[in-house]
Length: 442
Ligand SMILES: Cc1cc2nc3c(=O)[nH]c(=O)nc-3n(C[C@H](O)[C@H](O)[C@H](O)COP(=O)(O)OP(=O)(O)OC[C@H]3O[C@@H](n4cnc5c(N)ncnc54)[C@H](O)[C@@H]3O)c2cc1C
Image (cartoon, rainbow, N blue to C red):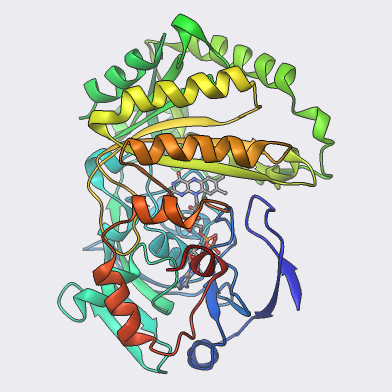
């Protein structure tokens, strides 16, 4: 048995960790699974990628198989990291359509969580760009699913959190880009209503995200920096930038030890937020060019940054709220967070569009993501936030979840009959079971 966790380092769970080195071995491990689930690079925060008894790691399946320059379609094994995909294809003028806030995730993990980026409002989630996938089922079969063949299986696997089988390989559509630079414009929003208005008013911009200062109160509640972005064209680069048209990521620095829990407190976070807000506000209005990596993955510059939260770990609370109820519910949540003074280092607000398959998280509305170090009274406080989310008709993101109740899950993901039918057909004896699935009764 091995003790593993997700990125939040909570909960830590004993599991039999299986690391098959070949496709055939993964097919066998899935067929012989004893309450098992596939695991990518372990970037889901909670217990989604930990099997009740067995966990099948997919990171040995890391070969890129084929690329068609004319169509921009690439076929890769499921354990390939987005960072490797970008390193291989950005210099050729291609970039994934959807990237989350870290590039250190596998293609299998990106499909299973149907990850969203800063462009979900206009371009949807990762699953939209999956042409076909090869899936190992608990029956021992290997099925190629596409929009034409086995569309139900494709639909259930996108956002299916690993609960339909082990994704072995996928063909995905990449986007053509002229450069690896992003034209970024920063806006200041002095309160929540202004932040929502800025995201709504810039819907035609490809990428948008608001960083919220969670400690601001009163008339400044929800004050934010809004970051807008577009892929830069070649003729928008100066000579020096043009000479480095596809800048590559620098190797990350590391957090060498677990930080003591007092390092992140009300005062240190307040000081950070104030400095960050002022520095951003100074840049507001003008456009700057930034390399894609720091624009999309600022936290990747610091390896193991999850150690900043100390040994006890942390949880992320990420909800989505339907547009019509979002502002009131967000104001209530942010008010409670500001009054509690609980060090939420990261607070990110994004606009989301239509949902896709499986247990896919997005719905048209706004998503707020907050990190909280684990401490006294945290879970009862998060239960309070869940009540507001459910009342507003929203739900929590399973890839970030470590603690929501079944009642919160059932209320948020009410329409799961199609997903459950697929599960019953392909896994009648219950070989696939993650800790998340067991906790939430999926
Ligand atoms: C810093 C940071 C920022 C993030 N930002 C975002 C964001 O902006 N948007 C967003 O949507 N997410 C975001 N995430 C979450 C992350 O993108 C997802 O949790 C993603 O699924 C992690 O991929 P992984 O390869 O690490 O998979 P894991 O964490 O190992 O697994 C995640 C899920 O995928 C399943 N899975 C993995 N591989 C396979 C496979 N081959 N076959 C079947 N199932 C599989 C697992 O069973 C599990 O349910 C962020 C995470 C971090 C740490």
